[in-house]
Amino acid sequence: MKISIITITYNAEHVLEKTMLSVLNQTNTNFEYIIIDGNSKDNTVSIIQKMAQKIQEGAFEGIRSDQFKWISEPDKGLYDAMNKGIDVSTGDFVWFVNAGDKVYNSETLQKIYDLIEIEKDCDFIYGQSVMIDEQDREIGERHKIAPKVLRLNSFLNGLVICHQSVIVKKSIASHYNMNYSIASDYDWVIRAYQNSECQGYIDQYLSKFMVAGVSSQKRQLAWKERYMIMKEHFGIIKTIAAHVFIVLKYPFSRKY
Image (cartoon, rainbow, N blue to C red; front, side, top):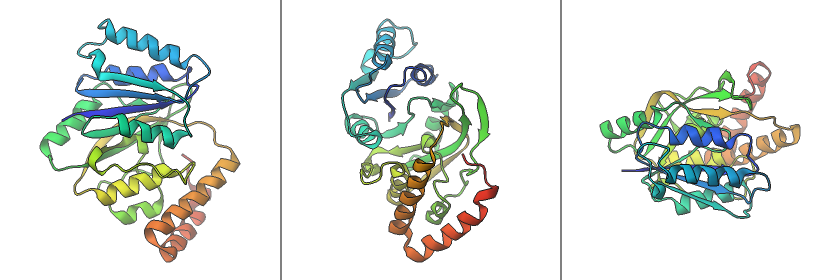
């Protein structure tokens, strides 16, 4: 049993190292670490190469060079890069911890394996996430707290699980839908849930998710794409009803 941890990067020189260290400093070193870089123009590749050299020199206890691989080449955006990550992964599970995000602490991977050991049939594992800013300061939980019992209708409230706190068995992990440019992770998590037979919940933080500024144009696009995704999975009546509720509570909700 092995987990593939995948990091997507593009011009991430200011935030990538903290992400990599949060993975490489896990007490449980039974993982494969993959970085998919979109042909960055800054010092991102230099940082990856420096870390690769440190791994080769044995700087991270228990981690071998063959556990780490990376690609830097042009892509068609975030979700194309994530699809590449799935394709090159060799683990039984995939877990996306993208540049700027972090595994919550050094014991997190061990807690995931502990759950897998107890509930061997689980193919969809999830937990909570805490938000951080670009200076790595914690700014609180998401206003959407992952439910202890997850049902398909839970997703009528949006992406109720932080994408960075979802670990999915590769056998049920489809490609990200490239028709969506900003909300394909929402669709991907729903489809993984629908394909799963056993969901395992860890009542702890699994990740730290970096919140960056979102323009009003991107926010409008996200709303449009989420509407299309909900209509596809739930039908028009449930989707309209859910959006009425979301619009009514939006002014009183935190926006992360």
